[in-house]
Amino acid sequence: MQGAGLGLETGRQVEIVYLAQSPRVARVRMWRHVVGPLVFLVFGGTAFLGMGVVIALTS
Image (tube, rainbow, N blue to C red; front, side, top):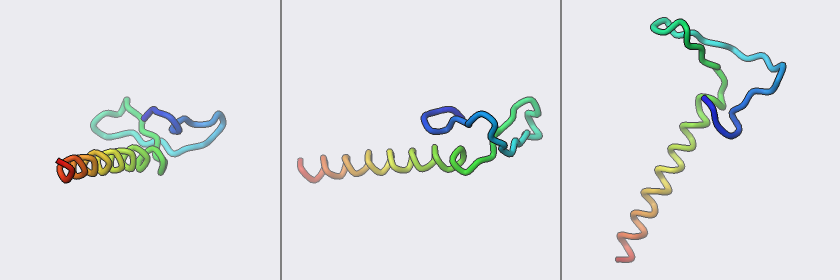
């Protein structure tokens, strides 16, 4: 996962997970790498739906 605020500091130790179906692909197991993108999507979806309701009510 890459993006703003998701970078790792030099020297930091993190848990690495290798998936059984693709052993050459590693995943970083950290809270902000798992939950961060999900929170962003939920917030964006809520804002999008909220704007749709505002537009529907003002028309």
